[in-house]
Every structure is written in C-alpha cells, then in structure tokens.
Length: 146
Image 1 (cartoon, rainbow, N blue to C red):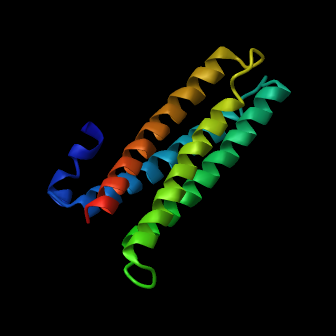
Image 2: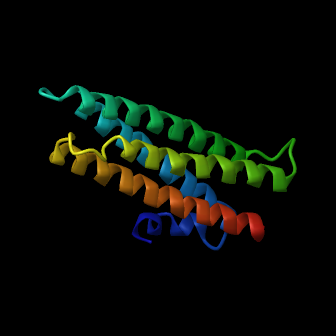
C-alpha cells in the first residue's frame, strides 16, 4: 500500500488506473533493479560462476522489462483486439515477467556464490517479484471486473 499511496488521487477508485499504475511501478522498479545488478557485475574479484549468474540475471531482467513495457503499452491501447484478448495477453506477459525473476534467482542458489552478492541480488529481485505479483493481481481483478 505504501508504494501505491502516492498515486491515490490519480487512481481514485479506478481498477484500470490501479492496474496500469501497478504495471508502471513494476516496470520502473525492474529497470532500477537491473541497473543495480549491472553495477554489481563490474565488481572486482567476482568468480566465473558469479559473473555467469549476474549475466543471466541481467538478461532475465531485460526480458521482464520488455514484457512489462508491452503490458503497459497494451493496457493503454484501445484498438484492435477485444478487451478479453488484451487482458489475456497482459496476464501472460506479466506472468512471464514473474517467472523471469525466479529464473534469475536460480543462478544464485549454489554454495559457490558469495553470500553478500546473493543477498544484494535477492533483495532487488524479491522487491521486483513482489511488485509484479501485485500488478498481476490488479490486472486479473480488472480483467474480471472491467
């Protein structure tokens, strides 16, 4: 609620605006997390497995950004597809973005990964996954009750 309280006057009681805002916040947070993790990749003394895990994670975050951007664009679109098809596409893309975050964390599960590195990445990914999950819930609610 804290994340979205700043948007309350804009959203008011609109499920569509709530879903759109949640997608936008998720997109911006995912971009920020990607920037943090890219900076981590430039740290000195990383082991090859850590570099590979970071590289894979950045690629997954890039995919998430693309999927969330498509979702935001589609949410603002009014033409072409039926409402049901647009919502179905958005739900699919947001679900895929959520899966990307899980896949990112898979690379950090081994005992060969530095604990501080793992903690820093996990903190970023948990925040992103939490917001994407909330966005998916808001999108699903809007899809069911336009």
